[in-house]
Length: 117
Image (cartoon, rainbow, N blue to C red):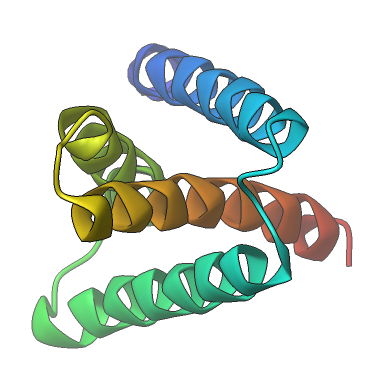
């Protein structure tokens, strides 16, 4: 089972690194302000709520289920949506794409902070 976890975690780690690099580039271009960070944090909290709610809906879960479900809901899906909407001509869609990217960054930062507690 450990090999499956590693094979599933490596693409997520790559997406996390790509997200942090993109966030850094957007920050250098001054496209990220306090408002975007707060909205990204709220989006991250909402995604975490969806993650917890998915456990209430699906009664059966294994010990490895949380690893896969958290990565899918909080990292992979927002990154895929960001990738497809990043170059949209609709300004609101592009802004939402930026917020999703920031939510990945805040998820990672909060995950690192709270995993050591």
